[in-house]
Length: 319
Image 1: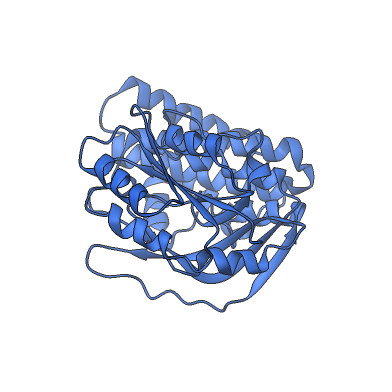
Image 2: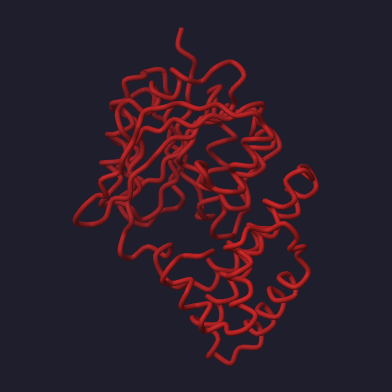
């Protein structure tokens, strides 16, 4: 018998996109799925849409809860999930019909996470993403190294099929944006082996009104907090990856400082100034021995002229 996959969909104010999302899930070629729709106190028609779909498909379970944010909704789904495997789908996104089947076909007994490729979809078009269909498997150490380098793995929650056991002691932090930045690295630590399937199986819809596409101070600071936590975690559990970990943290710290400087530096806000000072201290304290030439070149530019470093970052994405 096919093993059960629990698909968790956190839902809030997406009535224009929710049906597309649900339809992409119920038509999966892998049929042994549990669909958990978590209505996070949505004030629109989403609660009604969820209940209507639950009447149509017995695999659908609906949670109606007080609004607590994306992390709280995902955590509520994890708590009641009955499946051996977990998949997260954001409610304005949609998935390919063979996502579950494709991942389960390569989910060997010693693999706890299978990541896959995705495409960005905008209001009027979708990107033409190349794929080769190759599956690669990595040890815990190599997987964490590749996660640090973000090649091929990302910090996103939704581009992976997880064995539920990797969430045994892991939950998403409530009241924070960029919540997966503070979570995904822990699931990689808990995994025996991880795999990457180079097939486009997920469609990531980028809305023009999404906070992820805007200049949000909270998003920037929460994302950086996740980077700080991941950096400390990596140095504690993977000391042999010190250079890779230091390199990523230096790059992300410089990028965060420049974004604070350019987007919020003229606000004359003492809290922002303190945040910038804190990031500078982190930059100064990072051990820079054995770092790649490109990173050190960017660091030298950053020290000499931050406006020039910002120009390089925007033009060449050096960090």
